[in-house]
Image (tube, rainbow, N blue to C red):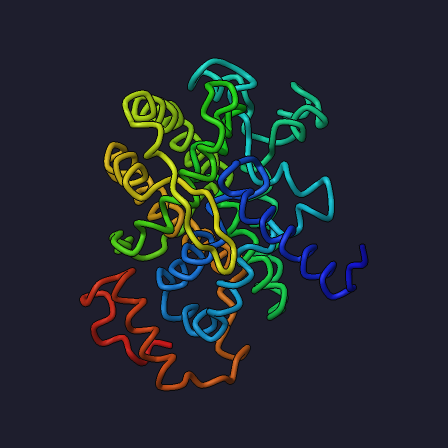
Length: 337
């Protein structure tokens, strides 16, 4: 039987699309928050910034939004990328006691566990610290391209560290017969419900000790890990098995996904957890960007752009600022950028 090259090409493309769409549902360390949530988190973080920074980031809003997912894309290229997105802290001890076992400083952790072990079980808090140094240097050098690249990347890693399942060896529920929970929690739920979240997170603040700050939000994430798993396991035990999943169109592909009814019940039982972690990630990203800029000597970013926003872009900016700050937060600030 003869197959035309065009038919083969279309078949291959469809197969790749199906595989890529299935990954968030199957859940693993390949994806985090889902592309949708990562982009939204980075985008909204811009509106936590002070007047001396926000103009630069507004004019590059699409860049920090679209490139929020670059670190996930790089995972297909090099083995060094994957450990930067998580830390399986429970490998080092039971419950929250694992944080007492793990030194916060990289050199001390290497001395205690070896670099190979740390890389095997994830290095996200330390890599966030590395990105802080890189972004600070980019601000000092007034390097437009590096500022944007490092801002986008660092936003991704910070957001990852706010996901409870990025802090455990049971990241996809394999140890508790809950395979698929990773993509369910961090992709499906934000896509379904984040339009109704309150993103009034306030202004970015200066962080005195960024590495400690990174460890602190990893700890908060890990403290929610048991709830993420236990609540879904309890729901699954009582939910009719034929109503847990549904088929939905994703582009031209029909996909098996968690049903909206099951998703809503799980979302409701967690009582705002996904919203709280997204809010915390947005504020943390803005604060870390702001801290890098301060530590670099507060360079004048207005010299690094000459693009004027269109009327449509200005309208979008006002709408986004209302989401992140509220009416009082932007009152009288239309000319701050």
